[in-house]
Every structure is written in structure tokens, then in C-alpha cells.
Image 1 (tube, one colour):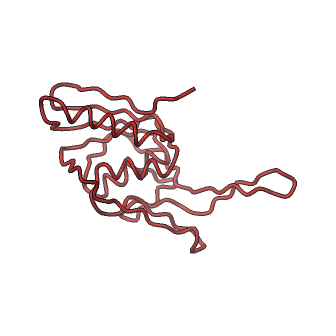
Image 2 (image 1 turned 180 degrees about the vertical axis):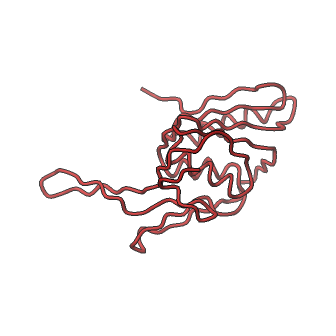
Image 3 (image 1 turned 45 degrees about the vertical axis):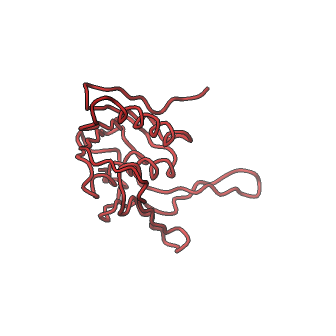
Length: 173
């Protein structure tokens, strides 16, 4: 059953609303379509509300791609683990489309993991105003290790950090 993770509407001419319910395989593509539609109206987009409330997270690459739509440079998120191989920094890239209109991100206690990465990246890069209540605080990175008998063991191998160096784990955004 395909799940539509992005819904959008025009609140009034020039003001858009985008709700992302989770970060699945097609989220970045669906957001690109939504932004193209909202930005191609008769009135230029003057502001956008990005609703991440009750978004439990999902795929890291989709969170990075969503953040990258609104950032031309800077860090999006870093992963820091005890071992060097579990440490990585994800940065923004200029994608040719400047999105300089004001952005508001809505979060709450149900916003976790990938949604916290997006909110933290946009807030720390001074790209969005984040409103709501403190997010869940799921900032740990897990790895699934298969054991000899076919069972698995999920290990926490690293933590997510916002661009300003804040740990998301147990703190939230």
C-alpha cells in the first residue's frame, strides 16, 4: 500500500502549507513536486509552513534531502560514534533553486528522529523559525547485526547532532 508522506495546500495566495507525515523512500521527490506546484502559482510564494508534528521520522537520506531543498550551504546533521567509521557529516548543496521565502517549521513531542534532524538543520542555519513544543529526542543511530543463529541484535552505534553541535538524543529540538 503506497503511503503518501507529503500533503500540501495553498493557505491563501502566496502562502503554502506542507505536511510531512514520515520520511519514506519518496518523500524528497514528493516534496519537490509540492514545492514546484506551490511556487508556480500566479502569486510568488511569500512564506511556507512545514508541518512535522507527530512525524516519527524515517530514512536519514530523505531528511537530508528535505533539508537540502531549503539550504544552499552549511551542515545539515552530523553523526558521531566511538569508532571513526561511525562518524559522518552531511552538508547542504546549492541546488540551483533559491528558496529565500520565510519558513516556519511546526514540531511537537511526536516529532522524532528524521523530523528532528530537519528542524534542527533549518533552525541552526537560521533558515526557519521552529514553533511548537519540544520534540521527542530520538537522536541515536542503530545498526542491526545478524547473529550466527539467524537472530539479530540492534546496537546503538552513534548519535545525531544538529549543526550547532546539540545532541538530539534525550534533548529534542
